[in-house]
Amino acid sequence: MKKFTRILAVVMAAVMAMTAMCVCASAATYSWTGTWHTEWGDMKLTQNGSKVTGTYEHISGTISGTVSGNVLSGIWTQTNGKGKFKFVMSSDGKSFTGSYGYNDNEPTSGGWNGTRDKATVIDSSSGSDTKTTATSDSMMIIYLEDGDKINIGALVSGKKASSVKFSTSDSKVATVSSKGKVKAKSPGTAVITAKSGSTTIKIQVVVEADD
Image 1 (tube, rainbow, N blue to C red):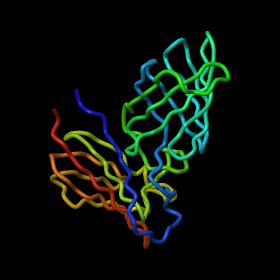
Image 2: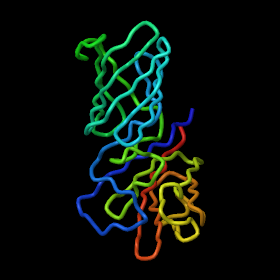
Image 3: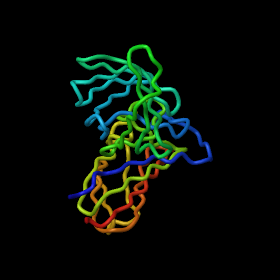
């Protein structure tokens, strides 16, 4: 079975000039948006700014919380009760460790851990993984398997697609269309360049062999 695309934004140390092309991330803070596999069933979360809402499979559960740094805390609710929870995301944005409590008790009991299901690992201090975090001061690394396709045009917002010029450093590894559609061709590494005016964004594409 093919792996899901993983997208990891790594913020570089040098800070360069920002333009309207980017929605910037100030640190490696990852969005909670996505599907997580947990002890209490799959959990689907949506982050909007610092607010997170979602559902999970166990007894029709819902959660609502607030993000502070890499910590998400708030209230869980099920048909049989409610309580507080606290999740702490890992440094790579791929998993979290958590705990919960009942009613007004602090979330110090039980285990509530999760691993991310697919490619929503995006550096996004704004909390939105639907807008670009590919900026002049960050390098996005996209992992694909040969044959996979992904549209990076959606990662470069603030400009019309027609005004952004895309190119690849190695078409044998990955190709890119004029609209930002990338196709993985064979194992290796290529750099996709998106240029608009004086702003240039580079996205590293790592293609792995399909298991």
